[in-house]
Amino acid sequence: MSEALDALILDLLESIAARPKPYREVIDAWRTSCPRLPVWEEASERELLELHRADGALLVQLTASGRALLSRHRAASLAR
Image (cartoon, rainbow, N blue to C red):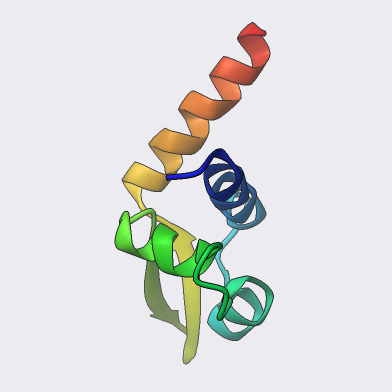
């Protein structure tokens, strides 16, 4: 996987980390038809995100794997 795609996936995870976000908001911002930068698709395939319903809304949040990846990235950034 390219470094550019990995960096974008981390940006996606950061954008959701603080609180679950509505699915429509996330998919509008991150879904792409570009086969070279499938950010949403790749993050979903890696099981870094999950969908759930709350108060009738479909929300996106990080999985345990997504939180762990983001935590490792943050720790590595601080160590630099």
